[in-house]
Length: 408
Image (cartoon, rainbow, N blue to C red; front, side, top):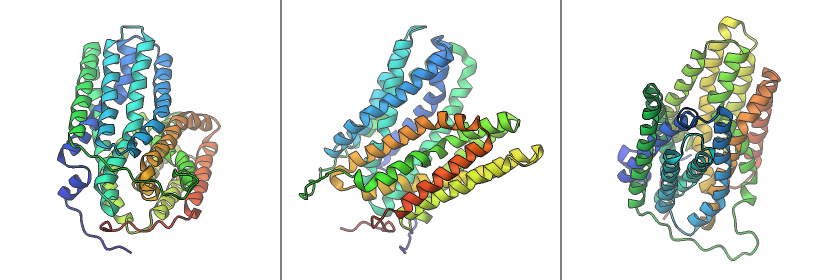
């Protein structure tokens, strides 16, 4: 078991890419937080599109954006790091510009804007993880990724609150907010590019056969599609269950979402540091078990009386958030640990493909399962997640505890 030394804030900033890059992450997170609720409202309120047309365009943009991931992976494997991060932000600037240029009723320009925003959103996680893996190693890398996730969640929460506060201003306020978001992405792109992080591409081993990381990570990638459903539990599954099945006040859904954000922001780094003493694969499997137990807890809560069901769901949601934190703190770091140096970009791109697919499929899957009752929803999620955790745990790769410092 590795000994631990507390990382100082300056160490965390350095491991994340330096002060300028940390500022870029903050600006990008705020911009994304502003844009997530804004995009739907902009399509409906400013462009006067129907809600179904707006939703279809947004979903199509997110899904089609995944098509760019193989190219992003190859670009990263040629050594690009901060350039790809900056590009993922610049393409979102183009998306915002198209959004502002779209006249009322023009669903094609709105769809094009959603596509470019989707490309940027899908490319960013892999590019960011590759940059962090280049400037930090071992435990510092794991904690830096956890710290950037906590920062991003905080930015998303603040951005969403700012977007909500601007709703009272009507069309003009929404247009101004979109313009501010585009400027935020532009500033973040400039800051990220100024870091000038580039990796020297490692040569592929001359052993013949497959030169990519896919075979050794197939179980992980398949399991990740199921694991990632947990990210939509607070936003989709719990509001759906609380309002339509338990007939509880919508206040409970809002409280659970806020609590989830606060817990992720405050606990992501300390929990990741604590779990860094153990093999990443084992930690990821434990995260799946915790999520499974929480899903069974949600199922049990639905059978309680009307007065206690909603508080019970809220209590179990804390356990679900803990499972999410463990999952998020170990999954990407496991990919960076398993991937050969010459194929790190492609490994991260494949991982993002599985994440994007799971996030895209989960709303439809959750709502379809919920229509058949609590047992179908929570029982299916619990069984699928437990099977995924078992697949992760049984695949052998020699991954151990992350070292305190990288070996020279």
